[in-house]
Length: 113
Length: 117
Image: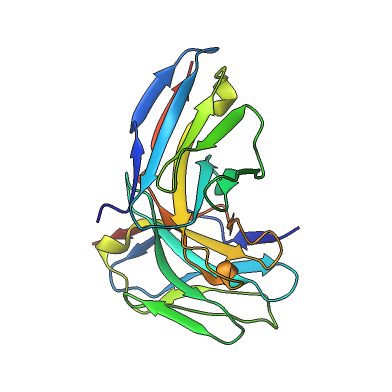
């Protein structure tokens, strides 16, 4: 079945550092790919998404490119801020079983000033 | 526009007790979902309702029942709570129009933290 694998956390960085959170997936066909963010004590919010190969999703300085050849959707940000501290989830939604999101295990990110 | 709301925010139950988690959305979405979040496991789908009047099992439905009361509301019931059901429960909704529904964003509520002793 469909699955998502994220780099394990927790990840701790200093403010203004470069961020990469790796995400790879297994799915049939061309799923849609998502990054959700969960701030402390809150629900999940969509950060960005991409619905076809080579699409780049971007929001709030974060970017991720849908790479079909490597089945990856890595999240990047050039200069992180303390306010980016949160848990980040990579997820996919496939053509089959399109009702559900399949989530990775989440990566906790802490940014120190 | 409140989005997706859930009640209660936190609940403690004893083993064997029952309770209902409530969820409502004001975005006129067709589909609604219940997920549970456990440490190190991401979120897993419990049940979903593709449209008003329909419900289907997700990945981990055992021990739960659901009711799609109307287009706005989707409740999750634990008939006899067990410690294994200690988790954070999230409700979500999506518009679910047409054949491109797999591209749609799901919108999440703030969650209900449940502790079963």
